[in-house]
Image (tube, rainbow, N blue to C red; front, side, top):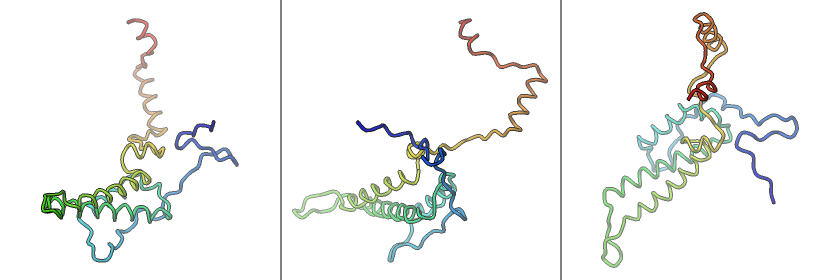
Length: 170
């Protein structure tokens, strides 16, 4: 029976016992790439690209990941353009004269599957970040702020209530 995998971020390098560390992309964000020939970037795809680079999770990328985020942008743009075009005419006439769902919806669905696969790898969305072992901290407490809070308690005489006492009293 195989051993169970360690959770993301808990893997230890056998050579020195340290966790693997990623180095942020030098220079930060990538410039918006040129669109494929004959295609324009839609405004929502450009906005998503900009928001991705404003997100702290983008700092975990390495230069080798450039093709992955570019593939995500191209698939997202394709999905948005095709689904909007299909929405203009959701039903089309089939080969036998019957109404059928616009085939662009199927193409949009395939593009969206690529978007989801890329998002899973680059950590877009809370579940995808968690599965990669990336935690975004909403508050950073510095040693100085913790010391200031401790000194304030000492000066006022305030004490943290012991949770064990509250549990016994009830």
